[in-house]
Image 1 (cartoon, helix red, strand yellow):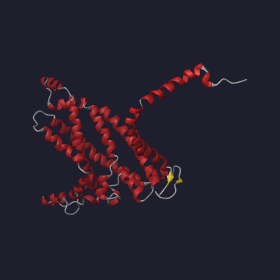
Image 2 (spheres, helix red, strand yellow; image 1 turned 180 degrees about the vertical axis):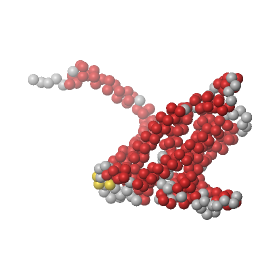
Image 3 (spheres, helix red, strand yellow; image 1 turned 90 degrees about the vertical axis):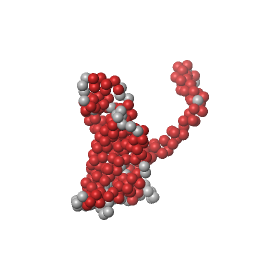
Image 4 (cartoon, helix red, strand yellow; image 1 turned 135 degrees about the vertical axis):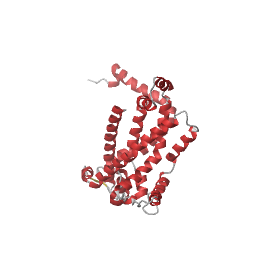
Length: 312
């Protein structure tokens, strides 16, 4: 008995018709898809492929030149017992605390002042505050290395000028981490201030006028009107600052070198990843460190989101 072909069944043909219709529609709009395809092609080559390859590489043992050998989860097992990895995690969090909290506070104050009616030449101030963000980070790191230099540094010159003893800034943990954090603050405070300023300008002025008529002080208006209405903007800056703070690399690398300076006190997670991959040629282990950093960023961002959302 001859079997009836599947496509001859009317119900099957009806089921296949929408799919054929979609392909025909896609073919008709091929010019549009071709116009937007460069973005997706570049993302697939330079974004998606490195992510997937790093995941594959984290399960391998590879020096970057020879043949890869499957290493299972050994790279991850070694990472969780590696004291230098955890020191780099601790250093990164300390530098993040030193830099992010004062940076966002200063940015909020600057934005509040720039939004005030008594400030003149506000456009000039906006440009001035944003300029550090577009300055080469290598140049910034070189300048700050001269400011915090143990010998002949600008800070030590000022300390000795007022009769105080000089400080070996780059020889102990607090000095190294303060130097790195100060670079982050100097570079990103203006950027966040501009974001806060955009948020402040979206708050209706009638709210401040009504509060003033009711006798509210400037501080009460700031904490009762400005902060609550800026909550989405504050959340955005906290999350972006968290992600950026966990990825510090150029500042410590230029300031204290690939080993993180004295006692590895300037070793951040990304600097450690870089050293393991491109100095020690442990590409598999460096990929595992990269995925470890990804998990830390996700958890820490979620924690910050929860805390900020509750208190803002």
